[in-house]
Image (cartoon, rainbow, N blue to C red; front, side, top):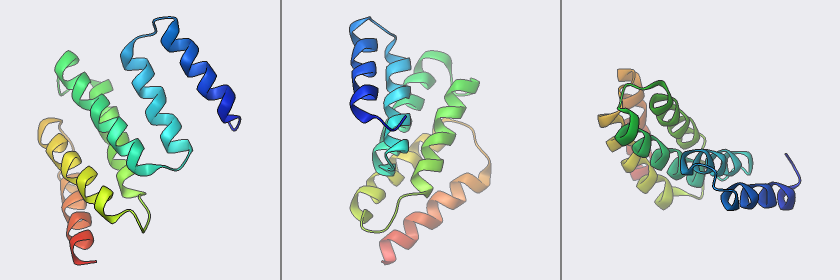
Length: 119
């Protein structure tokens, strides 16, 4: 959706109608990604994955999908966001300690954090 006022109004309507916090948080994360605000998308998806981990467990497909989306967003953070990317990356690394993933995922996060620290 490219009409941001309409999308924001729709999200506000969902909140007012009492939509589940899980659904609202997922939509906010998706909207951040569509806006190409990858740091915010990473933070939103990380928070969503942590909430789902507490509610459904670490192995639940919805939990794992939110963690995967957080990582995908983090890997797309562009230059000029170094400080925020490091903070989001540390939170993501902690998340990956709780939510199962491929061992390469953790290695990618560590390598990305190392690059950010060297820049």
